[in-house]
Image (cartoon, rainbow, N blue to C red):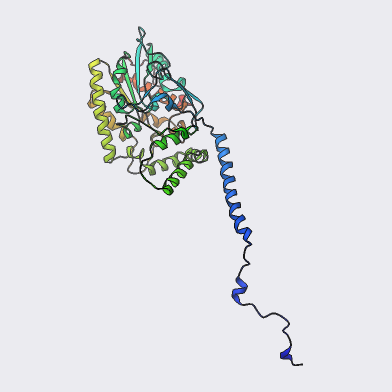
Length: 414
């Protein structure tokens, strides 16, 4: 038998393509693997949302339920004798109780007690004390501080309401004058410029909104009408739901606990940053011009009634952090907007109390604000009370010259 006729002892060397080819997945794996991936993602998402909601529980009730949001003649105002309890992600359960005049004043509206120096506070959410128990707001703390410094009986009536813009404050100003004030204190923030003309606020409300967070309802109110297409609308709703999730809030909360990270976010966003620039752009200048016109009208009404007005600017968290750190990027200046407001107010014959410079002596001022929301917490309100008291008793306000030395707000906050 010839050798060449014998069968080969081993198979021929496989072609390179055969060697590199991976065995095909069974058909069932093509179905199971994606399902496992989806289940894994869902499990992680659900677990993180559960943990986040336990860490930051929130009620479905909102303080907006106590407000009249759609009256273009008066602007936003509170419903008289209404009571709302609400809990934001970062806050405790807070009660918002309004008297028969629709004010979170902690007292009934009526004639001024004899021998009392009454201050009427006007403004928006910072002045109202959003997210903070009324007893711990600067409006509640300031009278005792002023009384101890001046030896006079001081009463502060809080007529501020969240979402009150300079326009609505101008329209409602007669109500402040009716409270028989010896002085009106107007506390403003950058929000007042960003919403200088706001009169109505109408978030969409429908049965599907029941149980949703305030953020979700308010976000719905800003949605624009029109045919966007099912796909675009679906993507939009997914993005909104992600932003409204407790998980997203939890991550952002801990990220924003860092002042530097929070400031980076602010500088990238725009709304707040535009009022922190050393050279304000057109939109900011336009808002400031409108604010000036409302302030002039308010000052004229106050002069006619013989009531002095004192204006002060309460810094947002980013503004307070920049001042406290004493550093900011080129092109920004946290004092600029305050200087502009001082010029406007004093040109109209009013008085301006500067508390911005007082934050230079507050270590790590950003920690006295809710990291994500940006409103001052109870410790922040105490600092604000001290700084306003310092300003009012240095001769800026008639009848309130202090006899006690000014105190350090930073020390008081500890």
